[in-house]
Image (cartoon, rainbow, N blue to C red; front, side, top):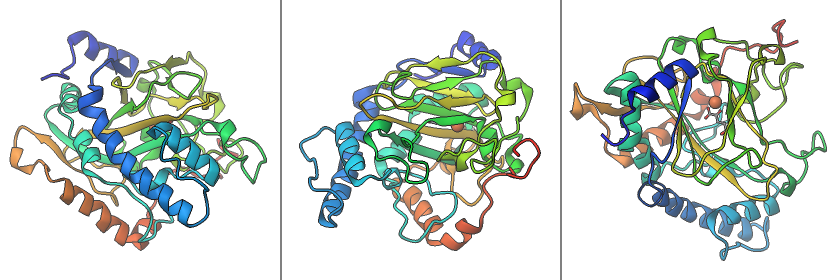
Length: 333
Ligand SMILES: O=C(O)CCC(=O)C(=O)O
Ligand SMILES: [Fe+2]
């Protein structure tokens, strides 16, 4: 079991609320297939944008990460949803872009990742559908935000992942798995955590459009108010192949991307089978089961179809509630 955690690693996770497992993934075996699959998505997207007059060149000569930067910057748009394997929180339409390809499914089922998860929650593992790819173009290369006139901020505000799901999942033993597809540091937007704060319970979160929120994209804009952000911050520079495991109540955030190159990452989540996912309108699956191996999903097309079916039911998805926070709450006003 290549990814099984050692006793020291388990102890670190339990006391600190997170663990960086260096080199858990092999770049050639585990990450290159994603890059190959996404190169096709990007090529089709660039071709379409050029046809529609949104960009002059398809930038076909550039390697993937540089090509993402060139295409997003010239189009002046964050086009991440074309690569994402989840749907937006509200506003989904039957033609909302989504990429649920076989290489992404293979990563969700990656044996080394599942070994690490098994060490934390046991062998009955559900792939929780709160999952994303994040393609963060250097902020200085994107046109300024039309509303504020300031550079578009791709930082991720401080939050706990428990805070971005619905309250039925508060006791779900959800583990976040965050992995960069290119090397990441404080300049290009690596993650930061507040160690040992996962034992404090759920902290208040404020919507991005409230005075205490930080008016930022993603995550429905949720942010923990400054008042609760005392205590040490640890930045986590990581290389492609490293994997961060996080407790659902560990406060975390990401630096801005002030570099000149793409910061991109996947975040996945796992939990014991049978517990609420906190996003019941989205589909998960049995990733590993010692008790009932026949229940495991091995069919990439069936997984993709489960997302297409959710997207087709767009009215239901749009009406759904994604979190519990109220912009009028005293802590946010
Ligand atoms: O990648 C980011 O900037 C944020 C990721 C995050 O919040 C998560 O993985 O839970
Ligand atoms: Fe998060």
